[in-house]
Length: 459
Ligand code: F0G
Image (cartoon, rainbow, N blue to C red; front, side, top):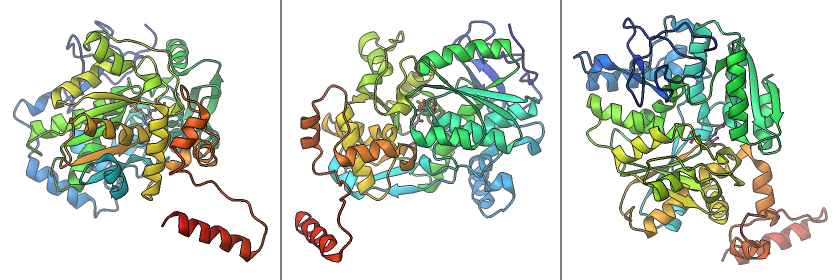
């Protein structure tokens, strides 16, 4: 089947690649990163950790801290700094890095009040070099593409993976093919792909349709697939959880709340927690919960209608275009993490997402719509009692506020039409959060009148 990659996971390396279903260790990797035996997804496994050569947790923690003071490029990356628990490259000079990771953890005091928890933090993955969490996984997977001497890399995307891939390919002197749904991409993301010089194809279909087309392309052309079925992507993304734990001085939060689209990210962060516990870096696990938009809720339905036994696919529709996905690849990995950490799956409406996004903005942080499902979901989880008021909670904000300025401007102007709700009702519901720009004559009196009116309005 197609072209096989040369980087067979051999015993000489610090890791192997195995199937999540049948457990078969792969002698070589197929172009689609599916198991050669049963066709399911693959994962990286550090078998030698069980064989008595596990890294020492105390040494790891001090090494990781020490590297933060180093200017060497691999140490300065918030991903490669953790290379002791990543699959190793044969040649470290293959690593393509933009100093990804190293993202901040912010307190969200207003959002905490609105959600009904005492304290709330956000790990802002939108503060990565291309403005989303994708960079952490991209640096690892594309470095393996380069090691394998690929000239072309490709992904199907809702916009952020493609922006990230295009940037890293350009940095590494490689060519990139972006396959995205026509018309359902936020402007910031599309503009990035163009700026970084990718061959950008907007297909007349949705994300799931793009995945199907790309699946055929990789069988007909020597091109390296960088979607999150590529297990190296998840290895890089996993470091965000390790970095978070380090930033919290290894105090494990009660809850981590993550948006769910293709379901790679929560699988990656969960893998990190499970591995850190296995190594003794931490002693307990956070409950990892996934939030989906109501109009793009395959995992929610899979859990509630099929008890997680088989995937319910949906025709996805949401203004949070990053997570407009109906047939998520990593649903099994995701469920495994949710089950192992005793988390849950929740869904939120478009109106709830819009309000939550404005609230995160009002805390001086901001994020793109898909990231805001976390706060909207948290509110529901507090109401249902799954999250207690005194619990420590971290929201994973996945994308930068500037990714989708059109959504934000429409919202504040009162022009956003959300599916399944009357415009007037939505405008009334969001009156408190909206701050429309005011067009005035160019004189101080007019501006001062606006200022005074605002001062009274805010009490
Ligand atoms: N948040 C943002 C901002 C995203 O871009 C994505 C996924 C997700 C959340 C969901 O993460 O897929 O790992 O469950 N974006 C992909 C893309 C699909 O192509 O950029 P997931």
